Image (cartoon, rainbow, N blue to C red; front, side, top):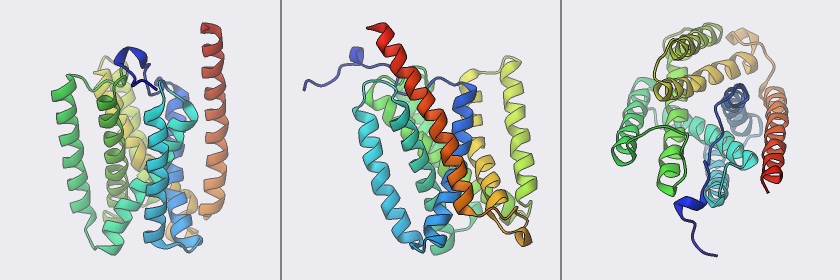
Length: 255
């Protein structure tokens, strides 16, 4: 098999639509709830969960990098696994290594900013409309992992360390997302607005996951990680299946 040239590639990531944001938010929630389920409810512990999910993520990303164009099921499987791994990174730093949420939030913010700076310096753009080379795709997925780790740390910092609670955390991050959307509609930079929203959906989804799963005595709704993960995964599966069928139909029509 001959190596792919840039001309052989199509954009490797989905268009930014309402469905994109719904799946993204639900993926972040699943990352929070599924990580808790595997580590706590299933009794695997954070170490086994982290290693196992990291290996699955490596396999999913290998498949993602091997594709020539956006393939919904591979892409969103990778996002869900990045969400779980990103959650585990923050949890291990906080629970096992004793790193404060203030420190981890600051470190992940610096890493994300550095990744953006290097990406822009080499590619002169942070847009996701032209993820058509291996280097751009590598920057994209590195950024995604950083946003999930940062979002988890920032969400935990807001709801736990600062004592805002799950309900107020959901409201605050939802309001910030609404402000970002309003700024974009009023003429704000589309690329900047996208990445701000992408970062904010992580703490919003994590806060939502905690609100749904945690016991009522801790300020949650008591649905539990098992049911919440199962329901959200079913919705993600339906939306991704619809996207996959849509891609398949467009490919057949173009032939």
